[in-house]
Amino acid sequence: MLHAYYYQLTPQREARTVSLILEPPARSLASVPGLGIRKDIRIADEGLAAGVRYRLRNDGEEAITIQFTSTSNVGLLSEQNPADVITIGTKKTTAGKPIDARHVSEIAVHSESRHFDIAIAIDPPCEVTTRPIYSITNSEQGFERVYQQLEIASTWNVTIEPDAHVDLEVRATAVGQMVEPDAVRPTARRRKAAAGANPETARMPRR
Image: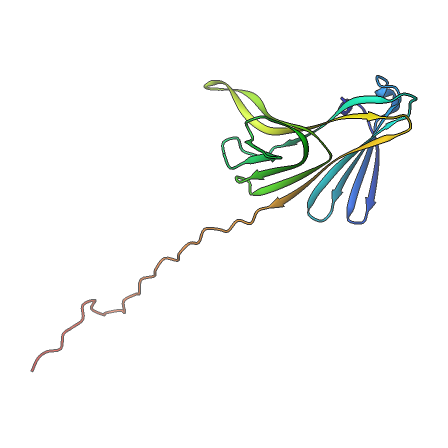
């Protein structure tokens, strides 16, 4: 539960990239002696790309075996639209249906309702679980369950030898979809009749 601790924040800026390095104090990880964690968040200036890399290191004298999970939430999918889908390997599901898959290296999120796609790359491959998140509201009809967002959890089982480290990375790139507006035919304009003109064509008199 590292989100409950204060991090040391080190902002950096490279060419076309902004990085934030987060590292919790050593005392917060006292339950696992020798374990150190560094979280590096990178946001690219060009395009909608972001990534996070975790470096787990072992500063102790014995090997460390842990299960590490990184969670991301996607709130732009609709539970009502069957065209909003998430693909994990060979499995495909909608936002409201959970899915579990192993040895996953790529995830594709497609939103037909919001017109965007997200490609997620995971290195090294891991176990991925998706779960819908709901809120409970009290309306005139009583308590209702309302869909809010989709949780994507990536879990690695890692073993870190003494004086060694392991890097775990999740990278996401968002791409907007081109949407063509519906063509609207212009309405036909009626010609204005000349002032004083008879709408019926006068016939020439016969001689």
